[in-house]
Length: 342
Image (cartoon, rainbow, N blue to C red; front, side, top):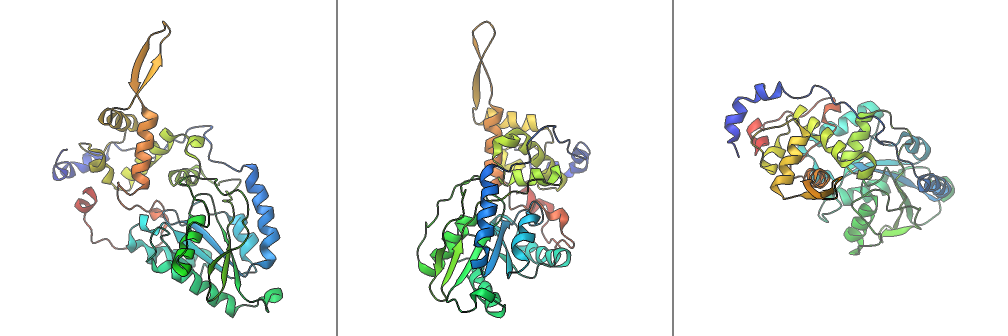
């Protein structure tokens, strides 16, 4: 690979070749509301009377983008509410205070907890139950005033880690896990589960719910950020389209970790060149039948795009906050551009 110091010196020249805007392809799905989501909404509404507190779980990489306002209005108004930003291990730690202050200023969200469901030692996991029991105790429980034990309902868009959070809470408080099946793709949970005990003292139970996408996503930008975090199934939008958006975003925000991770010589704004590089590097080929009946090998761009997505989602390109442009006051970075390059 070319020495980063060398191409950093010509970075202004490289940046002049970057796209200034992303041209969203026509007729690409960034709307996804299958039948089980509507059914899940009705099931959630039916359970609401027996719920003491609601937890909105969302991906920490997109704390402002893609949260379902219909769910928030329906389930938050009369109940104590906590926004749980899961997968917090995927973003730089220094952004957390700015995210909290922005959410408070714009949406009047008073209680935000960052969690990493993959790590039992994450302090946010204990903070979730501690904060929930505090808010419930301080609130009017109305018809549940004399009920022993607290019921929490978890809701959010698909694939933000709702089931993983419940399993992690059981692991922290009860030394038990795997109450719910989890998968790294959207749409696994399709019904509201019966309540699951996650703590004995105090007695805390959680209702898991299916991911409910907003039936009408306001902008293509939000849709692509949701797709980048796998809240849509990849094939609905198209892997090549998602990685093209990601490459545009990474270059625009000077997140150049992908350069060294992929073994590129310098930042590149042409997704086909990047995918071709990955395909050659990893020997990804497909055989396509020709008109005359013979077969010819071509680079497998779809598999290359899937690898690009996997590397981005596993922080191989670095810890990245996709919504950092939406923060009111970004943190002051002591890191230099050179740190990003490595």
